[in-house]
Length: 281
Image (cartoon, rainbow, N blue to C red; front, side, top):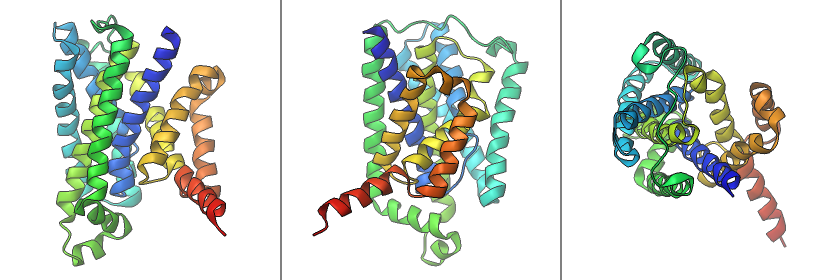
C-alpha cells in the first residue's frame, strides 16, 4: 500500500508541476526551458524552513512567494525577448540556480539537503495534501481559462503585436502568467522535497525542465485536461519501468519529437478527433 501511495503522490506532484508550466507556455505562449529552477526554489525554501521547525503547511506560502518573486524577475526579462531568445533566457535560469546552490553551504552545496523531516501525518496525509493542492490550482487555472484573461492569453500566444492593437495589456498579462506559473511550481517543489526527503542541485536540472515541457506538449499546449493526463502518465511510468528513469532525456526527447511530428495538438487533440469520429453520423 505504501508503494501505491508513493506513486500516486508523485503523480499528483507531476500534475501540479505541469499545470504550472501550462499557464506560462500553454496559456501565454512563452516557452520556458527553466521551469525546474522554480520547483527547486520551492523545495529548498520548504526544506530549510521545516528543518528549522516549521510545520509543512506553513512553508507552502513562503515557497510559493520565493518562486514567484524570481518568476517576476524572469517575467520582466521576458518582456524584452521572444521565441528562441526567451527559451535561451529561461534555460539560463536553471544553470544559474544550480550554480548558486552548489556554492552555498547553507543550501547543502554539492551534497544537498538530507534528512528533510517527514510530515507528521505520514505519506497518506501527504497524498491528501498533494491532491488538495492540485485541486485548488486546477480550479485557479480553469477560472483563468474561462475568464476574459483566457481570451487575452490566446491573443498573446497567437500574436503579441495584434494583441496590443486589440487593447490587451501584454506586459501585465505576461508578468501575471510568470508569477502564477512559478508560484505553482514552488508549491509543487515544497511537496516534492517532503516526498523524497532529500534534495540536491542535480534534482532540478535541465532534464527536469525538459520532462515537464514534454508533459505539456504531449498533453496538448494550452489544454488543461490533456496536460493532466500526460503528466499523470509520464510521472507514473518511471515508477514501473526503471529503464525510462535511466534514459529520461532520451525518452522525453523522443516523446517531444513524436508529439510535434505526429500529434502537434497532443493527447487533447487526439481524443477530440477520436470523439468526433465516434459521434459522426
